[in-house]
Length: 391
Image 1: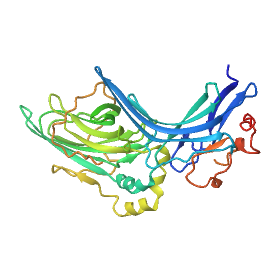
Image 2: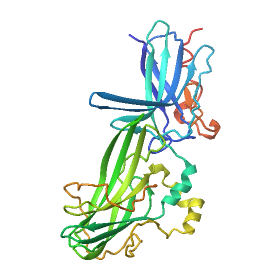
Image 3: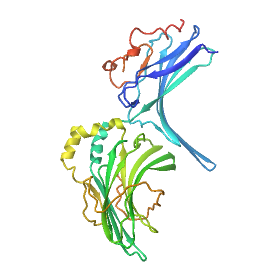
Image 4: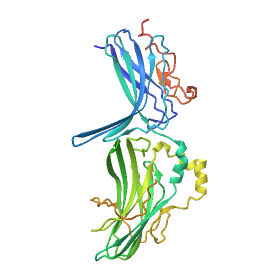
Protein backbone atom coordinates (compact mmCIF):
# COMPACT_ATOMS: atom_id res chain seq x y z
CA UNK A 1 0.00 0.00 0.00
CA UNK A 2 1.35 3.39 -0.96
CA UNK A 3 2.49 5.64 1.94
CA UNK A 4 1.41 8.69 -0.10
CA UNK A 5 -2.16 9.62 0.79
CA UNK A 6 -4.62 12.35 -0.21
CA UNK A 7 -2.53 13.71 -3.08
CA UNK A 8 -4.25 16.81 -4.40
CA UNK A 9 -3.67 19.92 -6.51
CA UNK A 10 -5.20 23.15 -5.26
CA UNK A 11 -5.24 26.68 -6.66
CA UNK A 12 -6.46 30.06 -5.49
CA UNK A 13 -9.50 31.38 -7.35
CA UNK A 14 -9.01 34.99 -8.46
CA UNK A 15 -12.52 35.62 -9.79
CA UNK A 16 -16.05 35.07 -8.57
CA UNK A 17 -16.81 32.57 -11.31
CA UNK A 18 -13.60 30.61 -10.62
CA UNK A 19 -12.24 31.18 -14.13
CA UNK A 20 -8.89 32.34 -15.51
CA UNK A 21 -7.98 34.39 -18.58
CA UNK A 22 -4.72 35.12 -20.44
CA UNK A 23 -2.42 37.16 -18.21
CA UNK A 24 -3.80 35.78 -14.97
CA UNK A 25 -1.43 34.17 -12.47
CA UNK A 26 -2.43 30.76 -11.17
CA UNK A 27 -1.13 30.23 -7.64
CA UNK A 28 -1.59 27.00 -5.76
CA UNK A 29 0.09 24.00 -4.18
CA UNK A 30 0.55 20.26 -4.40
CA UNK A 31 -0.61 18.71 -1.12
CA UNK A 32 -0.32 15.16 0.20
CA UNK A 33 0.04 13.18 3.43
CA UNK A 34 2.72 10.60 4.28
CA UNK A 35 2.21 7.60 6.52
CA UNK A 36 5.97 6.98 6.71
CA UNK A 37 9.26 8.34 5.38
CA UNK A 38 9.76 7.66 1.70
CA UNK A 39 12.41 8.21 -0.94
CA UNK A 40 11.24 9.79 -4.16
CA UNK A 41 12.76 10.50 -7.54
CA UNK A 42 10.75 13.64 -8.21
CA UNK A 43 7.55 15.60 -7.69
CA UNK A 44 6.45 17.20 -10.94
CA UNK A 45 3.69 19.49 -12.10
CA UNK A 46 2.31 19.41 -15.62
CA UNK A 47 -0.19 21.64 -17.38
CA UNK A 48 -1.86 20.85 -20.67
CA UNK A 49 -4.68 22.09 -22.86
CA UNK A 50 -6.55 19.89 -25.32
CA UNK A 51 -9.57 20.02 -27.58
CA UNK A 52 -11.26 16.75 -28.56
CA UNK A 53 -14.18 16.05 -30.89
CA UNK A 54 -15.56 12.54 -31.40
CA UNK A 55 -18.79 10.99 -32.60
CA UNK A 56 -20.14 7.98 -34.50
CA UNK A 57 -22.35 7.62 -37.53
CA UNK A 58 -23.45 4.04 -38.04
CA UNK A 59 -20.32 1.89 -38.04
CA UNK A 60 -18.00 4.84 -38.62
CA UNK A 61 -16.32 6.75 -35.80
CA UNK A 62 -14.75 10.18 -36.14
CA UNK A 63 -12.07 11.63 -33.85
CA UNK A 64 -10.12 14.90 -33.85
CA UNK A 65 -7.72 16.29 -31.26
CA UNK A 66 -5.83 19.56 -30.91
CA UNK A 67 -3.12 20.11 -28.28
CA UNK A 68 -2.63 23.77 -27.44
CA UNK A 69 0.20 23.29 -24.95
CA UNK A 70 1.87 20.77 -22.66
CA UNK A 71 4.48 22.03 -20.18
CA UNK A 72 6.14 20.31 -17.23
CA UNK A 73 8.08 21.60 -14.23
CA UNK A 74 9.71 19.81 -11.30
CA UNK A 75 8.70 20.94 -7.84
CA UNK A 76 11.11 18.48 -6.20
CA UNK A 77 14.07 16.78 -7.86
CA UNK A 78 17.75 16.35 -7.27
CA UNK A 79 19.18 19.76 -6.30
CA UNK A 80 15.60 21.02 -5.98
CA UNK A 81 14.57 24.62 -5.95
CA UNK A 82 11.26 23.66 -4.39
CA UNK A 83 9.23 25.70 -6.85
CA UNK A 84 7.24 24.82 -9.92
CA UNK A 85 6.98 27.55 -12.53
CA UNK A 86 4.83 26.97 -15.60
CA UNK A 87 4.78 29.63 -18.30
CA UNK A 88 1.99 29.07 -20.79
CA UNK A 89 1.55 30.34 -24.31
CA UNK A 90 -1.82 32.03 -23.95
CA UNK A 91 -2.17 33.31 -27.51
CA UNK A 92 -5.70 32.76 -28.73
CA UNK A 93 -6.44 29.59 -26.78
CA UNK A 94 -10.17 28.80 -26.89
CA UNK A 95 -12.35 28.94 -23.79
CA UNK A 96 -13.12 25.80 -21.81
CA UNK A 97 -16.05 23.85 -23.22
CA UNK A 98 -17.91 20.63 -22.46
CA UNK A 99 -20.36 19.26 -25.01
CA UNK A 100 -22.05 16.05 -26.07
CA UNK A 101 -19.48 15.13 -28.71
CA UNK A 102 -16.43 17.12 -27.66
CA UNK A 103 -14.63 19.20 -25.07
CA UNK A 104 -11.92 21.82 -24.57
CA UNK A 105 -10.16 21.29 -21.25
CA UNK A 106 -7.17 22.68 -19.35
CA UNK A 107 -5.63 20.47 -16.67
CA UNK A 108 -3.03 20.71 -13.91
CA UNK A 109 -1.47 17.34 -13.04
CA UNK A 110 0.81 16.51 -10.09
CA UNK A 111 2.95 13.37 -10.12
CA UNK A 112 5.16 11.80 -7.44
CA UNK A 113 7.66 9.31 -8.89
CA UNK A 114 9.49 6.65 -6.87
CA UNK A 115 11.97 4.02 -8.00
CA UNK A 116 10.42 0.58 -8.47
CA UNK A 117 6.98 1.84 -7.50
CA UNK A 118 3.92 3.01 -9.34
CA UNK A 119 3.73 6.78 -9.50
CA UNK A 120 1.05 8.71 -7.60
CA UNK A 121 -1.01 11.17 -9.63
CA UNK A 122 -3.65 13.85 -9.10
CA UNK A 123 -5.17 16.39 -11.43
CA UNK A 124 -7.36 19.48 -11.33
CA UNK A 125 -9.21 21.13 -14.19
CA UNK A 126 -8.94 24.87 -14.72
CA UNK A 127 -11.78 26.75 -16.36
CA UNK A 128 -10.29 29.07 -18.96
CA UNK A 129 -12.12 32.02 -20.51
CA UNK A 130 -10.70 33.82 -23.52
CA UNK A 131 -10.57 37.59 -23.02
CA UNK A 132 -9.38 39.38 -26.15
CA UNK A 133 -9.47 43.14 -25.68
CA UNK A 134 -8.19 43.60 -29.21
CA UNK A 135 -11.71 42.64 -30.32
CA UNK A 136 -13.22 45.42 -28.21
CA UNK A 137 -13.83 47.66 -31.24
CA UNK A 138 -15.76 44.87 -32.96
CA UNK A 139 -17.84 44.27 -29.82
CA UNK A 140 -18.68 47.97 -29.60
CA UNK A 141 -19.86 47.97 -33.21
CA UNK A 142 -22.01 44.94 -32.47
CA UNK A 143 -23.80 46.95 -29.78
CA UNK A 144 -25.50 49.00 -32.46
CA UNK A 145 -29.02 48.08 -33.63
CA UNK A 146 -29.17 45.68 -36.55
CA UNK A 147 -32.06 45.23 -38.94
CA UNK A 148 -33.23 42.88 -41.67
CA UNK A 149 -36.32 42.20 -43.76
CA UNK A 150 -38.04 39.51 -45.78
CA UNK A 151 -40.99 39.31 -48.16
CA UNK A 152 -43.15 36.45 -49.40
CA UNK A 153 -45.67 36.23 -52.20
CA UNK A 154 -48.63 34.08 -51.24
CA UNK A 155 -50.05 31.69 -53.80
CA UNK A 156 -53.31 29.80 -54.30
CA UNK A 157 -56.40 31.29 -52.75
CA UNK A 158 -54.33 33.41 -50.36
CA UNK A 159 -52.96 35.79 -52.93
CA UNK A 160 -51.09 38.82 -51.76
CA UNK A 161 -47.76 39.67 -50.21
CA UNK A 162 -46.36 39.47 -46.71
CA UNK A 163 -43.56 41.78 -45.63
CA UNK A 164 -41.66 41.72 -42.35
CA UNK A 165 -38.93 44.02 -41.07
CA UNK A 166 -37.11 43.18 -37.83
CA UNK A 167 -34.63 45.07 -35.67
CA UNK A 168 -32.55 43.84 -32.74
CA UNK A 169 -31.05 46.42 -30.38
CA UNK A 170 -27.53 44.89 -30.44
CA UNK A 171 -25.58 41.89 -31.64
CA UNK A 172 -23.52 41.14 -28.53
CA UNK A 173 -24.51 40.41 -24.93
CA UNK A 174 -23.79 38.23 -21.89
CA UNK A 175 -25.83 35.60 -20.00
CA UNK A 176 -28.55 37.20 -17.88
CA UNK A 177 -28.92 40.27 -20.10
CA UNK A 178 -32.04 41.09 -22.10
CA UNK A 179 -32.29 41.74 -25.83
CA UNK A 180 -35.03 43.85 -27.40
CA UNK A 181 -36.47 42.82 -30.74
CA UNK A 182 -39.11 44.65 -32.80
CA UNK A 183 -40.90 43.13 -35.79
CA UNK A 184 -43.04 45.18 -38.21
CA UNK A 185 -45.41 42.98 -40.22
CA UNK A 186 -47.44 44.10 -43.21
CA UNK A 187 -49.90 41.32 -44.10
CA UNK A 188 -51.47 42.09 -47.48
CA UNK A 189 -52.76 38.54 -47.92
CA UNK A 190 -55.94 36.77 -46.85
CA UNK A 191 -54.17 34.45 -44.39
CA UNK A 192 -53.68 34.75 -40.66
CA UNK A 193 -50.17 34.41 -39.21
CA UNK A 194 -48.31 34.68 -35.91
CA UNK A 195 -44.93 36.30 -35.28
CA UNK A 196 -42.47 34.15 -33.36
CA UNK A 197 -39.03 34.78 -31.84
CA UNK A 198 -36.35 32.20 -31.06
CA UNK A 199 -32.88 32.21 -29.51
CA UNK A 200 -30.91 29.26 -30.89
CA UNK A 201 -27.54 27.69 -30.11
CA UNK A 202 -25.65 25.76 -32.76
CA UNK A 203 -22.60 23.60 -31.95
CA UNK A 204 -20.51 22.12 -34.76
CA UNK A 205 -17.89 19.38 -34.30
CA UNK A 206 -15.41 18.82 -37.14
CA UNK A 207 -13.10 16.03 -38.20
CA UNK A 208 -11.31 16.79 -41.46
CA UNK A 209 -14.10 17.09 -44.02
CA UNK A 210 -16.80 15.60 -41.78
CA UNK A 211 -18.97 17.57 -39.39
CA UNK A 212 -21.62 16.85 -36.79
CA UNK A 213 -23.89 19.63 -35.56
CA UNK A 214 -26.49 20.04 -32.84
CA UNK A 215 -29.03 22.84 -32.58
CA UNK A 216 -30.95 23.81 -29.46
CA UNK A 217 -33.68 26.36 -28.89
CA UNK A 218 -32.87 28.26 -25.69
CA UNK A 219 -35.86 30.59 -25.68
CA UNK A 220 -39.04 30.94 -27.75
CA UNK A 221 -41.74 33.62 -27.67
CA UNK A 222 -45.01 33.95 -29.60
CA UNK A 223 -47.02 37.06 -30.46
CA UNK A 224 -50.75 37.44 -31.14
CA UNK A 225 -52.35 36.43 -34.42
CA UNK A 226 -52.11 38.99 -37.22
CA UNK A 227 -55.33 39.30 -39.19
CA UNK A 228 -55.50 39.35 -43.01
CA UNK A 229 -54.87 42.68 -44.69
CA UNK A 230 -53.46 44.37 -41.61
CA UNK A 231 -50.26 45.78 -40.18
CA UNK A 232 -48.80 45.29 -36.73
CA UNK A 233 -45.67 46.19 -34.77
CA UNK A 234 -44.62 43.46 -32.35
CA UNK A 235 -42.01 44.10 -29.63
CA UNK A 236 -40.39 41.25 -27.72
CA UNK A 237 -37.88 40.94 -24.87
CA UNK A 238 -35.51 37.96 -24.95
CA UNK A 239 -33.53 37.21 -21.80
CA UNK A 240 -30.27 35.35 -22.37
CA UNK A 241 -30.22 32.25 -20.14
CA UNK A 242 -27.53 32.03 -17.49
CA UNK A 243 -24.89 29.34 -17.57
CA UNK A 244 -24.61 29.00 -21.36
CA UNK A 245 -21.26 28.72 -23.13
CA UNK A 246 -19.81 31.85 -24.74
CA UNK A 247 -19.50 32.11 -28.51
CA UNK A 248 -16.58 29.93 -29.65
CA UNK A 249 -14.93 30.67 -32.98
CA UNK A 250 -11.19 30.15 -32.47
CA UNK A 251 -11.14 26.34 -32.36
CA UNK A 252 -11.01 24.54 -35.70
CA UNK A 253 -12.76 21.36 -34.47
CA UNK A 254 -15.46 22.85 -32.19
CA UNK A 255 -17.55 25.97 -32.72
CA UNK A 256 -20.44 27.48 -30.76
CA UNK A 257 -22.70 30.05 -32.41
CA UNK A 258 -25.94 31.80 -31.43
CA UNK A 259 -28.77 33.23 -33.51
CA UNK A 260 -31.94 35.19 -32.94
CA UNK A 261 -34.64 34.20 -35.43
CA UNK A 262 -37.74 36.25 -36.11
CA UNK A 263 -40.28 34.49 -38.31
CA UNK A 264 -43.94 34.29 -39.27
CA UNK A 265 -45.82 31.06 -38.63
CA UNK A 266 -48.13 30.67 -41.63
CA UNK A 267 -50.29 27.56 -41.97
CA UNK A 268 -49.58 25.41 -45.02
CA UNK A 269 -46.82 27.74 -46.23
CA UNK A 270 -43.10 28.26 -45.87
CA UNK A 271 -42.33 30.50 -42.91
CA UNK A 272 -40.44 33.70 -43.84
CA UNK A 273 -37.73 34.55 -41.32
CA UNK A 274 -34.99 37.06 -40.49
CA UNK A 275 -31.91 35.72 -38.70
CA UNK A 276 -29.47 37.75 -36.60
CA UNK A 277 -26.12 36.25 -35.52
CA UNK A 278 -25.50 36.93 -31.83
CA UNK A 279 -22.16 37.01 -29.98
CA UNK A 280 -22.36 35.77 -26.37
CA UNK A 281 -19.51 36.98 -24.16
CA UNK A 282 -18.64 35.67 -20.67
CA UNK A 283 -20.29 37.63 -17.87
CA UNK A 284 -16.91 38.79 -16.53
CA UNK A 285 -16.30 40.68 -19.78
CA UNK A 286 -19.57 42.60 -19.73
CA UNK A 287 -18.24 45.65 -17.80
CA UNK A 288 -15.53 46.20 -20.44
CA UNK A 289 -17.66 47.62 -23.21
CA UNK A 290 -19.96 50.38 -21.94
CA UNK A 291 -17.46 52.67 -20.21
CA UNK A 292 -14.42 52.32 -22.46
CA UNK A 293 -13.39 55.51 -24.23
CA UNK A 294 -13.45 53.64 -27.51
CA UNK A 295 -17.04 52.67 -27.00
CA UNK A 296 -17.99 56.20 -26.06
CA UNK A 297 -16.47 57.63 -29.22
CA UNK A 298 -18.21 55.09 -31.41
CA UNK A 299 -21.56 55.66 -29.75
CA UNK A 300 -21.22 59.41 -30.15
CA UNK A 301 -20.50 58.87 -33.83
CA UNK A 302 -23.82 57.33 -34.66
CA UNK A 303 -25.38 54.97 -32.20
CA UNK A 304 -28.84 55.83 -33.42
CA UNK A 305 -28.32 54.38 -36.87
CA UNK A 306 -29.20 50.72 -37.29
CA UNK A 307 -27.27 48.54 -39.70
CA UNK A 308 -29.80 47.58 -42.35
CA UNK A 309 -29.88 44.53 -44.58
CA UNK A 310 -33.24 44.96 -46.26
CA UNK A 311 -34.18 43.46 -49.59
CA UNK A 312 -37.68 44.89 -49.69
CA UNK A 313 -39.14 48.31 -49.32
CA UNK A 314 -40.82 48.03 -45.93
CA UNK A 315 -42.95 50.52 -44.03
CA UNK A 316 -41.18 52.63 -41.46
CA UNK A 317 -41.34 51.29 -37.94
CA UNK A 318 -39.91 52.35 -34.59
CA UNK A 319 -36.36 51.38 -33.80
CA UNK A 320 -36.64 52.28 -30.12
CA UNK A 321 -36.81 49.26 -27.93
CA UNK A 322 -39.71 50.00 -25.66
CA UNK A 323 -42.20 50.61 -28.48
CA UNK A 324 -45.94 50.73 -28.28
CA UNK A 325 -47.45 47.97 -30.39
CA UNK A 326 -50.13 48.87 -32.90
CA UNK A 327 -52.04 45.77 -31.83
CA UNK A 328 -52.28 43.75 -28.65
CA UNK A 329 -49.37 41.41 -28.14
CA UNK A 330 -49.23 38.48 -25.73
CA UNK A 331 -45.99 36.53 -25.48
CA UNK A 332 -46.15 32.91 -24.40
CA UNK A 333 -44.35 29.61 -24.85
CA UNK A 334 -45.84 27.55 -27.67
CA UNK A 335 -46.45 23.86 -27.30
CA UNK A 336 -44.86 22.85 -30.58
CA UNK A 337 -41.88 23.90 -32.62
CA UNK A 338 -42.95 25.21 -36.04
CA UNK A 339 -41.26 23.84 -39.15
CA UNK A 340 -38.40 25.88 -40.57
CA UNK A 341 -37.46 26.29 -44.22
CA UNK A 342 -34.37 27.66 -45.91
CA UNK A 343 -35.69 28.37 -49.41
CA UNK A 344 -37.25 31.78 -48.81
CA UNK A 345 -35.61 34.87 -50.13
CA UNK A 346 -34.71 37.05 -47.17
CA UNK A 347 -32.43 39.80 -46.02
CA UNK A 348 -30.89 37.82 -43.17
CA UNK A 349 -27.77 39.27 -41.63
CA UNK A 350 -25.01 36.68 -41.50
CA UNK A 351 -21.91 38.59 -40.28
CA UNK A 352 -21.85 38.46 -38.10
CA UNK A 353 -2.21 35.57 -6.11
CA UNK A 354 1.41 34.90 -6.33
CA UNK A 355 4.25 34.62 -3.83
CA UNK A 356 3.86 30.87 -3.56
CA UNK A 357 6.13 28.95 -1.22
CA UNK A 358 8.32 26.05 -2.22
CA UNK A 359 5.14 24.15 -3.00
CA UNK A 360 3.72 26.76 -5.32
CA UNK A 361 3.29 26.99 -9.04
CA UNK A 362 2.27 29.76 -11.36
CA UNK A 363 1.60 30.58 -14.97
CA UNK A 364 2.52 34.27 -15.10
CA UNK A 365 2.32 36.73 -17.92
CA UNK A 366 3.86 39.48 -15.76
CA UNK A 367 6.07 39.70 -12.67
CA UNK A 368 4.68 37.77 -9.76
CA UNK A 369 5.59 40.55 -7.32
CA UNK A 370 2.47 42.40 -8.42
CA UNK A 371 0.13 39.84 -6.87
CA UNK A 372 -0.55 39.61 -3.14
CA UNK A 373 0.56 36.38 -1.52
CA UNK A 374 -2.34 34.22 -0.32
CA UNK A 375 -2.53 33.77 3.42
CA UNK A 376 -2.52 29.98 3.29
CA UNK A 377 0.75 29.96 1.39
CA UNK A 378 2.60 32.61 3.43
CA UNK A 379 5.45 32.01 5.89
CA UNK A 380 8.58 29.95 5.75
CA UNK A 381 8.86 27.34 3.01
CA UNK A 382 7.24 24.11 4.11
CA UNK A 383 9.62 21.14 4.48
CA UNK A 384 6.99 18.82 3.03
CA UNK A 385 8.72 18.14 -0.29
CA UNK A 386 12.34 18.78 0.57
CA UNK A 387 12.31 16.44 3.57
CA UNK A 388 11.17 13.41 1.61
CA UNK A 389 14.07 13.54 -0.83
CA UNK A 390 17.10 11.71 0.52
CA UNK A 391 20.47 12.57 -0.95
